[in-house]
Length: 119
Image (cartoon, rainbow, N blue to C red):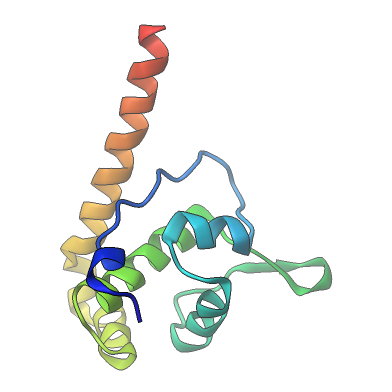
């Protein structure tokens, strides 16, 4: 379990690429690879593409889902079952956590574009 200081760290922007390895997702979401593999078993919404040698390739929506799961478990204090219920229930469509995550991501990307334009 993460302590309070690790639960609320600022996550990095998600790069604009199509697929991410488990190591990249681990860094982007501040979650260890073995935890990601475990979450795949616990959350049916999390289904990375598997290719050669059973290697996992996550897409942008998977990374956002992992960040949402991380927020539910580490920041909001849900159990695995409670988080699963939040994601699969009707309230998942209205979940502000995912909206906040998307807004933060877009803001970081726009700030990067702004920095590029200033050069």
